[in-house]
Image (tube, rainbow, N blue to C red; front, top):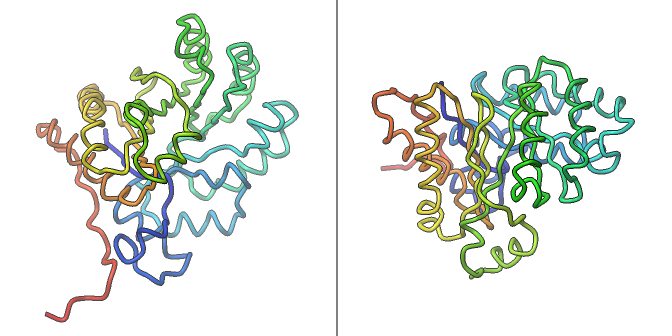
Length: 285
């Protein structure tokens, strides 16, 4: 039983000199990020399958208890829509093998065009995947959230293989108009779907989008802090990724979320987060 927290990436320009030293070689950025957070979203794998050497570097920069949620390439989920994907799927699975147990889940993110009518194809695809990994699915078509029968059909397909449904909670973000350039950009790109709080497995994964104002972001995640505390009491191990439109404070916010949950379950002796590596030169005095 553990709570993993993280962000959408392990390097960001606004983190330089704050959370990560600057300059810092690309081969060291994940190591420093992993001293702030215990999980990260693998969004880059959506665009291209990484080389085996790259993945070995990721493994070498992280402790065994660090967790990756790795997105399957869009060739599989978007371009070919789960059809005739044996070759790119095998290439992806072989490439990420060095991460071993660091893979929290292999994550299938579908576009809004993926509808309840596509669930049978997903069910067939999931049954063909190797049982050595956990799998998670994110959907965005409104019917999955508005139609209980559509939700039930998807849940049944996921439960049959022990896969999780990843919610992307944008309700706090869309509760009031944008107030910054980053928020205005996200306003046109992020999905508007209801909050979903039901976990299917003992390893739920949450993506939460707040605002550029850290205080508003923390205020908005309070329901999730309560839910995660309940999950921990049920001996589940959630993973939570904190997003904001600019992601400027994401590592610190992820740690704050962990603190909020930990304060709710003092009797569980939840493990603390690692001590961050220094982001700047040591002080002289």
